[in-house]
Length: 92
Image (cartoon, rainbow, N blue to C red):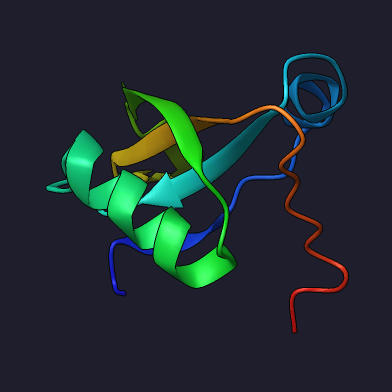
């Protein structure tokens, strides 16, 4: 249940949702593909065909003389089975 942090909404993710039947989630950095698949199937009651993950490095940021770094995070591309759909506007 705590594997998925939330949906990742971007221009690329909306194109993937329309064309490739994929949904993009921000997940915990230690989450495995099988845990992500089980969490999505349980939360949204859909069947998952495939899960692909990638790690995103945090950017270096400056505010005047102060330097900082954003946190690293993990993104999961979840391909749904044919006919399945997740609509985040109706989810809650």
